[in-house]
Amino acid sequence: MGRGFVNWARSSLDGLRTSLWLVPLVMFLFGTGLAIIMLRLGGPDVAVGGRTASWLNSGNGADARNLLSTLLTAVISLAGIVFSVTVVSLSLAANAYGPRLIRTFRADRGTQLALGAFAMTIVYLLLVLRAIRGDAPADEVQDWAVAMGSLLALVCVLALVWFLQGVSSLIVADEVVRRVRGEFDKAIDKLPVLGDAGPDVGLELPADFEEQALGLRLPREGYVQSLDLDQILGWAEKHEAIVQLDFRPGDFVVDGDRKAFVYPPPADPDRARREIGRYIVSGQQRTPDQDLEFAIRHLVEVAVRALSPGINDPFTALAVIDRLRGGFARLAGKQLPLPGLVDRNGVLRVVRRVSDFPEIVDAGLDQIRQSASRMPSVLIHMLRAIAAVAEHLRTDEQRISLRNHARLIRAAGGETGDMSEDEDLEREYRRALAALESDRVASVRRPRSRS
Image 1 (cartoon, one colour):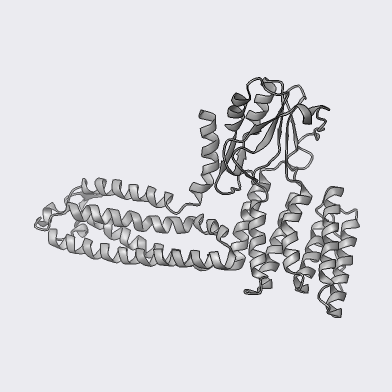
Image 2 (cartoon, rainbow, N blue to C red; image 1 turned 30 degrees about the vertical axis):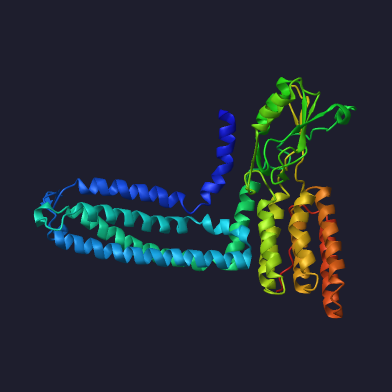
């Protein structure tokens, strides 16, 4: 039970990180505590550096309440502007870049802190205003609390400027693409360097595996968000079994799907289903926790929308291709997850579906190529990107995958009907093939400088 809760909490972390309520809620509670502390500090007789802080004097109770009431009204008005701009920016993001990219805007820490600053200031001013009596003499007014309210109001003004600056950059296409590519980079950074993950494990299943393996019903419907493979491997080793997972993080499964197979069949199938089900976490949406294609599909969505007839913005598609090129270059030097896992004795225990390099490249280039079949400039840029990635490739599988995509791009460009553009496309295609057929790995031949 405890382990299942940990897995659920780990998969839910992305939802908390991209929420607009967590940081404001924490700052709201902080504002409540701050108001209680400041109200206990007392009036203007509190000394600062041995001298009475007379500059803190807020007048009598009526003056202090008028000041706090004015500040509260102003901060609420500013908060209304912030909330309105947030809704408008989210609407623009959904229309221009796709509704799934709203999480990128929600995850912006600047937006969360700005909303939190207003929530904190509003609750602080409300509590302090309620605590100060209008008929209180000047020596009974909590001047420190009033001064802190004025300071927080000034902070809200700066937060508004900061927020508008952040929103203005967030709705720029290049910035959106850069932020989404950042999630792809985080997923790549978790992978070991190519050659450091140990030898590949053979997937020689028993001859009667398909006939004897028992399919276990998955416990819940939704997108698979994470798999605790260490626990599944430990379970298989304990029961001297082989577990085959016919799905991977990011796949949608239905309650009752038989996509987990155990060989030999367990004596108690219901117990095996419950135990293995604790290590499979699914939810209502995909998360980047273990899903390597998550960020790629977001980048592709931006490019496909930009290439649609209603928007017709090939420059955004070019920016996406550049970011994909950088991601593929980094991915070429990484060891992708292996489909087979062995126990401490080297016995195969877990077989799973994984994403290989060709599948990841397919996810990044297929839809863009199909949407850009009538845009030679985008196709030419894709071929140039393939040629640039070639020097980073390490395996024949990687080269064959990009070579196939180069051929598909040239075939898609044949529909333009423009002879001059066909010549440019053919020239870039030949350059891409030459780069892919080269034996260079890390060195690049640089053109000689003209004297």
